[in-house]
Length: 174
Ligand SMILES: [Zn+2]
Image 1 (cartoon, rainbow, N blue to C red):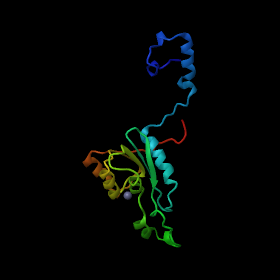
Image 2 (cartoon, rainbow, N blue to C red):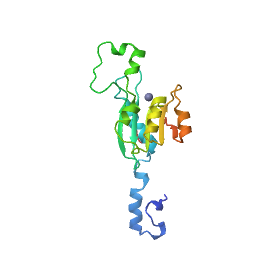
Image 3 (tube, rainbow, N blue to C red):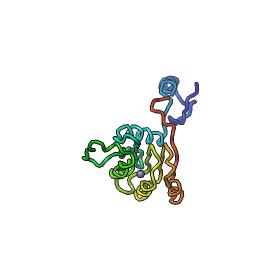
């Protein structure tokens, strides 16, 4: 078994035998190997947030991370805070649409411009949300599901925003 000495800042040959055995015990063989990437981490958070959406037709979650990859917050699509949908509100899929606050807009209510490095959304931002994300200065945007009516890809390309689909985000260690 080899030891990745780069993790410990010293070469293999300088280690005392006891140190070697300690390193072996702590080596990756005894640890879960899977470590998800930052975009996967953000998407997994967005995925969990989407589970809280009250929209029976389309559940969208989003997550924002700062420049140290710390979580600023998560959000999902829904009605304005404090609004209780009357009976029959959800019966008409088209009519409800104009009242829905999109996950990305709700997310942007949690921070100021320049505070967020990256965001992830379980659905590609619509054109309007993409414009809002641009206004907040977000330079990395990850999405899971494609939204074909959105101009987000074109907006991202124009403004130099990293725009990438992330569909593989294991929720358990692999
Ligand atoms: Zn939107």
